[in-house]
Length: 300
Image (cartoon, rainbow, N blue to C red):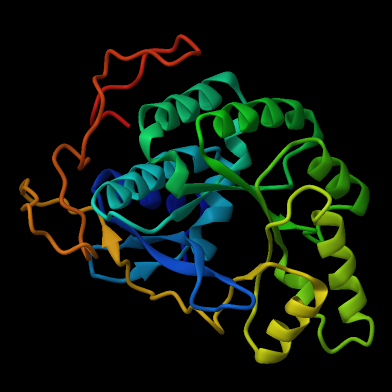
């Protein structure tokens, strides 16, 4: 999708408006028992009118820069909730842009959406990048704790991102209580360096001061898998054990409404929607503890 940033953002927003959005998944596996899945991360997929699938690498930077990332976050959360509502087992993870912490309106909309579907909280992990500006970290810390009180698990994503600094990374990590830390793939991809094992071990040791659940991302070879195990990680994520599909495995559809049958297969390939949603949704008159009226069904 080779477009200017403004045109790219408009195309993405139009695609979401037309319900041509879905997700693929990549599992987070136990480092020792690979068949054990902690959860599966939802990876956004936009489907163009000609059927071409567009991945986040192509549109997320422009969406973040334009301030529209929270709109995608909320749509992806709705998709995840719909999948969870129609599958009795399995957990998902959704990325939450740090743009959600930038102002009170974004924070309130995110919290109210999560509050409304809190019955599914134990099966959803919210992944938050640790690169939030220092000015936003106090707001992020408060919101994260409110989210965890609802029963959601929170993961710090891309921990140790090389574009940050060691000091800001450590400060961000220790400023909040989280359930999972995901170490940036950069550290495991240094496996050709003689000090690679020490560097990864140090990152895992630092993260383990906050939580025992440490995920090393970017695992593509058995050598990297062994490196993560020796470093003390509890879980890994990457193409070696779980290669996501390009096409979405679960998506919105913009066709006429259809209804779920009682004996629907547990693994849906397409989402079945009414006004953009599926499953049980509490009344729109419900109030969250923050006193913000919850949005009506179909308005997000």
